[in-house]
Image (cartoon, rainbow, N blue to C red; front, side):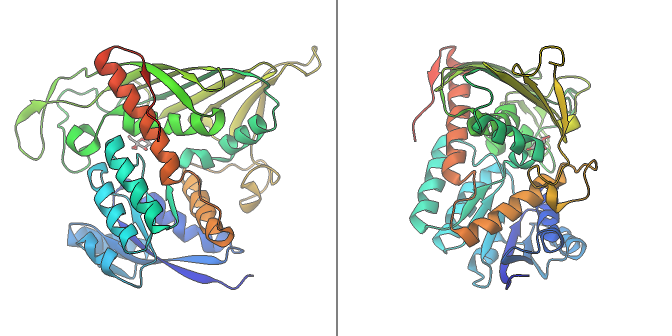
Length: 383
Ligand code: SOE
């Protein structure tokens, strides 16, 4: 085993993402023992002291605090992990970078492109290691899709289409804002499905198929008013409940994206398909260990969609887990992101997606929302 260096983590936010990241840090020692850096769960922060204490005990953090600035001021903390609602990402990331700390930020990078720009500037000025948790890239079947595309097997790409469908906000009585519901409050989240769900699809698309040049979009807010949990008042809902957009990629292919929280029966159906001249690929989060692949070069009597069960040790990340045939889950994508971040500290190579790369995703989101508001095609703003 290599000589290990400790990396003290300060985690801010104890929600669902705080748990996925903490689990990621914990699994490293057992499954990626060769890595030089070992994450240490140093301090966790939540505004509610009891919650922070319980989280620290459950996940093994040595300390807990209720003010995130204490994490920034603590010189023994090396890396700040931001798992708070979107309206706090910029302030925390900028403060952490100014203190020379590494920053790992939950997606989307921020509420707006303007906030994202300031974050990229601060991170690059400080020259600190950084990454944004677009975790789906690190599901082995998705990483394999990237390898297949980069090998050129698909040939010229014609189409990229993606969906992210949920149904959890259909109930008109569901309040907006507050604990667990901040994703429904535009002031906190920045947008609805565009920033929350389509940003995942856009991140994957940019990674697999390159930059997007322009977009045309439509959004809808199906329930116009909801009670705000914090004020107790019925207020206008300003998030997009659903969004669909068309786009052109710089490689000449066409994109079609849809996301909604009003697709009854769908809890988290993330799918994408990419069609090339020679071959096509499709993937579905509900069957995440599987990659479907059609290759026109196959013998015509056997030609058809192959269903590749991505569990072999020669496939991305799978040498770390069990034996061929046995799959892994959603949570492993976060373990892989931690591993890749730690490896990037060893090699000095950036851990993708960096803040700058996540800025490009944000730029597409902004163009989508602008297009939906104006009804016109919009160019994706340049960095
Ligand atoms: C929303 O329900 C959500 O939890 C997103 O915020 C996550 O990013 C996505 O991966 C699953 O759905």
